[in-house]
Length: 155
Image 1 (cartoon, rainbow, N blue to C red):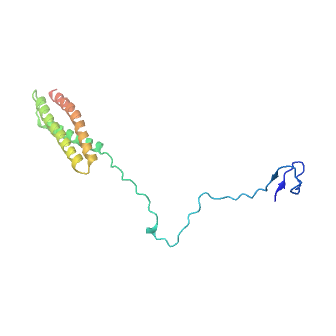
Image 2 (tube, rainbow, N blue to C red):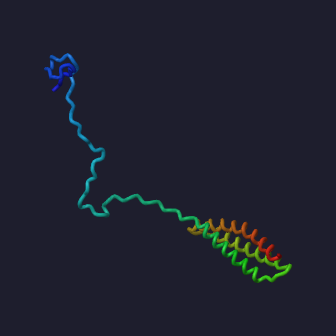
Image 3 (cartoon, helix red, strand yellow):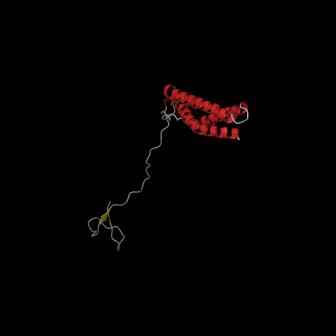
């Protein structure tokens, strides 16, 4: 039923007698849910449910710190052994320098070789990269400490 909207006379008037705009009555507002509720299926087995998406495999952490620390400990150990094995005197510094340089070259070469083998053949690419980087770091630190060790032995 249409009602006549007359601001001065709010009483309803018949359909033909209204000189103003006819309006329809408003329907009561019903709240509708945007997402329908999830229906629970009572006889659903655990294996019938939707699978969760698999999580991507996490990359293992780069073991660079451990590799450098272990190599540094090995370097300190053989530097202590070479200083104890060499005597004192004017020629002791040259002997310590030669022994330390040989051992550092052997350690760096071994690190690089094992690193290349692990990177290109096995599934331990992170460890192989860490060994190669720690070999380069040991080469830089080792020869500086080798010269310092020789200077200490001569003094």
